Length: 150
Image (cartoon, rainbow, N blue to C red; front, side):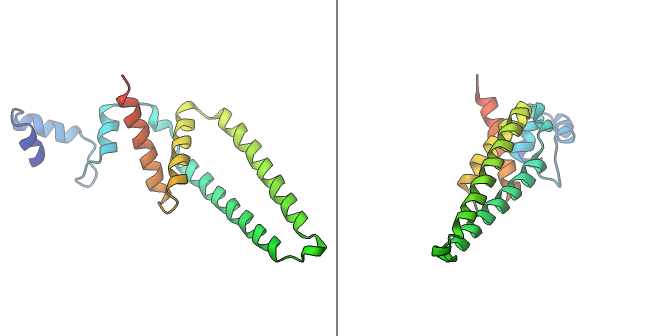
């Protein structure tokens, strides 16, 4: 409140009190995302970040499984051709995942598809960041992009 009083000296104390009551403040703090969402309400509420987090965890699990299989193929007996089964399994799994992902992407609402695309982009750049941070950054980027456009 004191920051607002200093930033807006021409606004009365009563008006600042009303503003403080209407702002979406959680635990006495106001984040940029909360402020932007309050100033520019949109259909971001239809975005399901939890679904993306679950799918991302599954993707990481599948990727880990694939890496494990490739490691196992390198220690398999090379002359007995056990590695062929591993590569066939990996190819089939990758194809099935690509088809399922493509079908799902076509059925997503526009806001959810935009969020997932942005979240996937961020998570590919920052592998050590938590999924919650990636999701909030993706929402922040989408909001900022939408409100910077003329």
